[in-house]
Amino acid sequence: MASDSQERITSITHSDVEDAYARWAPVYDFVFALVMKPGRKAAAAAINALGGKVIDVGVGTGLELPMFNRNVRLTGIDLSDPMLEIARKRVAEQKLDNVEALLVMDAMNLTFEDGVFDAAVVPFVLTTVPDPVRTLDEIARVVRPGGEIVLVNHIGAEKGIVAAAENWLGKHGPSLGWRPEFPWSIVGDWIAARPDIKLLERRTLSPFGLFTIVRLARN
Image (tube, rainbow, N blue to C red):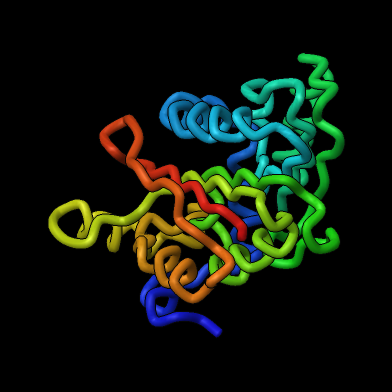
């Protein structure tokens, strides 16, 4: 069931996401690599400190894959096969042997068994899925007790000019493939409702605090 926070954000469908990222795929790295690099580096550093078997939810073109240590065994999933094709080329060209699989999969319906991963990294995904809470539930399900979930995402402004701009951009969310307006309460309320999840860290990142890294423990 959607929360009150979810009901206030722009509706987006799988078709919206697939269509948008089929268009974005050829230019995604050029447009987004630089601005999102600090977030990807922060997420990779958190995962590198853990090691083990890790699911990369929304791996896209695989920009963060070379940032992981080789003791991190990665399975990447994404809804967009055109994006994954670029990731596959990156893995082959850079000989990233620790990437065990790159799979077309819906983050809201992961096909893995419970607790099979030591950790999950979720870069810039929650704003792109139809149901962020269901996505978080699925990610928590496949991470073992004692593991971690590392999120990097844009968190919308609560008020002011930035909030107004995000709300305006939100009207174009389906064509963009993501929602510019995304309140912290979606994640915060989910954490509060899950006694098995503990917030370890939440901090903003450069540039300009545009993105936030969140580390969660799966108890």
